[in-house]
Image (cartoon, rainbow, N blue to C red):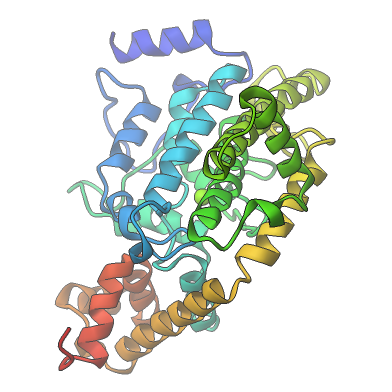
Length: 381
Ligand code: MG
């Protein structure tokens, strides 16, 4: 099937409010279209082949990357978000290729060591233009990736770039300067809810795996009690480790089903017939039902109080923040320690921004190696 066949298939099969690749606002640098792929399939492929995407494998999600092989990393989190958002997108008749591209790219602006790395860079860059991971993600795909001789960055479509800038979670409020006002496209909204479904559930699971969370504490949370009850009704008495897995499985399904049903009603209720109608609304229409929202917030508050404030997590978070800060300051104090490519970049982008780009792009283990070279070069392990 050629690209034009694929575009025709989109116009025949997608819902009227889906974004169609033939209607894309295009790329910053003009290029010939691919023969066998739509513009969003091409975006997805460019993302998978870029360095920032591969580095997600060695970046921390919540639990430090080196602590165990079963915990989520940024890469496995990203794959889970892609899976969940594609399910939602397909069920609503949205453009699944666009959704997948947005999901795969949504975390490429993240620093090493999860949010503690970001907190450190935000403080260090406060007087030098600031740091926010969505804005940085856009910088990665627009400027920092060097894959093609014709242009810097990946030259992604307007729709994927806008979705990076507007990606919003309970924990961050990006400013999407330079893009249209209003909510993001429905495909990007599907990724936002999928992101929160993925992290709520995998943080629960990883939290139990570390032993920081257990079922007894979790029974304070109404949604968890409901999930355990459903697992017991289906399977009878289960050993605790099986019960946990089945409860998490139930919750993911419960969230996804709720989003699909509630969003369908929202789309109908607001008479959304074209993608333009969706971005003219005051708020997102792909969302959880009003009856589920407070229960989900209560689960997140519990995770926030018990998991993210556990002394082991706080200790690791503070150590990571000091770590990123020390590396950054060492390079700014004497930029001659930077690799030649980064020194050249500092002349172009300014010293602080270039060091910030370098440090933000590091994986956890690359940052650890740089730390040893900078501060403990004589230490033998
Ligand atoms: Mg995410």
